[in-house]
Amino acid sequence: MEKYLLTIEFRYSDVPTKDSDFTNKTKKITIGVFDDFDSAVIEGNKNLEIFEKHFKLNKNYNKKERFSKNGGCFGSKKTLISNLAYLQTPFTFYAKIDTLVYSDVEETTLTVLDATKRYSKYRKENYED
Image (tube, rainbow, N blue to C red):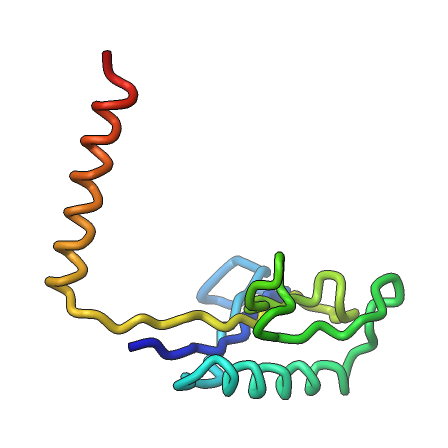
């Protein structure tokens, strides 16, 4: 079973606090978990519009970025959007759709063990004299 997790991570600077001397901060928020990719895309793009209400498009890029089923590299899913060439914001953000895969721990462990055995055999056959 798969679900889709939509998050936005903010990276920004702030004054140090008594808990920390660091000025670089990170805040990651969860927008939602969705049963299908299309729902995550729709909600993710709605949230990108919120950013566009507050910040201008990058004048050198001047294109709205969007999550999509086939707008990524070589027609793959576009699951990561950042402001780096998209919006002029005083902070960095990464909006992301991750695929959550629910699986049995024992079944997954056995699958991984089988893979490591196959790899070990492959290494011996191809790289050892």
